[in-house]
Amino acid sequence: MIKGKCLCGETEVEVENINDTVIICHCSMCRKQAGGPLFFSNAIKNKAFTLTKGSNLSVYPSSEAAERAFCKVYGTFIYVLQR
Ligand SMILES: [Zn+2]
Ligand SMILES: [Zn+2]
Image 1 (cartoon, rainbow, N blue to C red):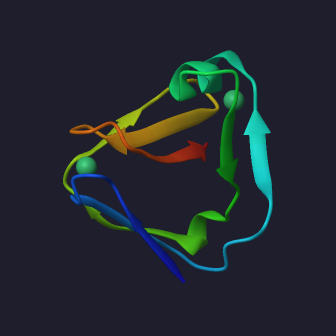
Image 2 (cartoon, helix red, strand yellow):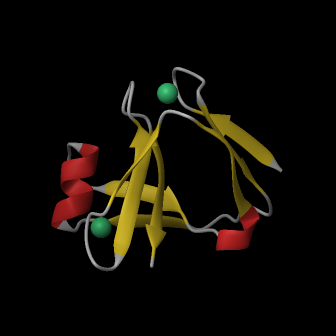
């Protein structure tokens, strides 16, 4: 179990069974989100992810395929969820 939170502490997550696979994406949306040439994340199954605190969470529907969530106070990236 790994726990994480955003910079202001109002968004918290728990992830079970995190794996060693890092995904690097160069698509235009990921480049804009990262503010650089690439974006990287860790792929987990939906049921392994729990949002335990989310009062400052904002969800942006970036495409028909995915939504991106972040802390609306400091902008800390929380997750990309593929629909
Ligand atoms: Zn925050
Ligand atoms: Zn991408």
